[in-house]
Image 1 (cartoon, helix red, strand yellow):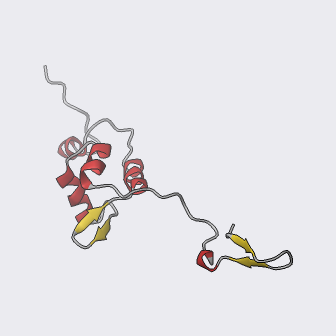
Image 2 (cartoon, rainbow, N blue to C red):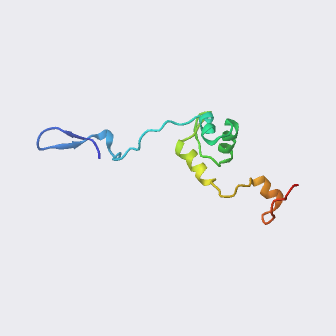
Length: 103
């Protein structure tokens, strides 16, 4: 709800500073690459590479790159898989190939 200021008993005015801002989401600080890397379990340089290639959304403030927590969590959710094998081993073996039994 917008903030309401009462001028007298019969007149109610809306605060002009809150016009169009009926709902304001809670403030969440932007994350540095090192913090995003800790959440993702990788290096800060890899996080910056994900941002540069467009895989992880970022906020650029001049030369500074920051990340929203919700974008980092969404990246994790997009990459959840039930397959235990890594992408590299799947490429080496082919999609239908079974793992070799090394005895």
